[in-house]
Amino acid sequence: MSYKTRYEDLLRWFTGKMGRKLTHLKDIEKPHWLERDLWGLFHNIQDELVELMIAVRDGDLENIEGEATNIAISAMIIADKARNTRRKMNVIIHPSITREAIVAAAEADDSLGFCVSCGQQTSGVEPDAREYKCESCGDLSVYGAEELLLHVT
Image 1 (tube, one colour):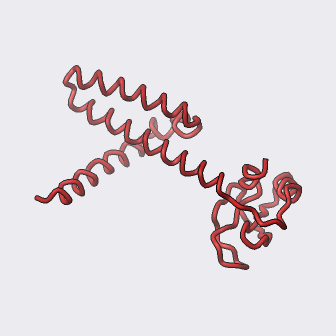
Image 2 (tube, rainbow, N blue to C red; image 1 turned 120 degrees about the vertical axis):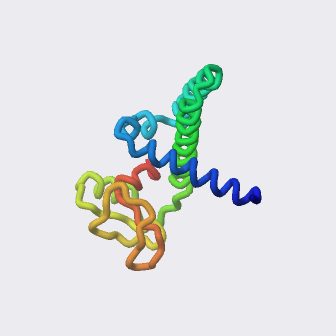
Image 3 (cartoon, rainbow, N blue to C red; image 1 turned 90 degrees about the horizontal axis):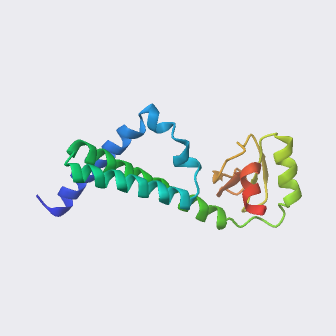
């Protein structure tokens, strides 16, 4: 068995464990996983690491797998939070889209979105939409009004 095959099998097994864990209701409903900032998520991973250390010390093989899975899920969530934060920082808004227009659209709650590439306003856009396809220019650059508020405040 090649190293590549070994790691492919291991990755498939481990991501399967992660997927199964994430389908358990008690794990889905952990708001701290999704609502915490990066520093809070880092502390969460430290807590999981302590739990893994205890499982290793006790020789609890089943719990070792579970705690290692928790660490991987926590790391995935940290990476996702960083990716989303980076995306939010890198949005360049078309000059025709004013802060006032975005605020008015968000307050009106009328499902208005904006293409940050060409400035086109689009109706029927979810407030938290990101990178939807613009019918005018074709770019994946339509954002919901509330999502754009994160970029202009």
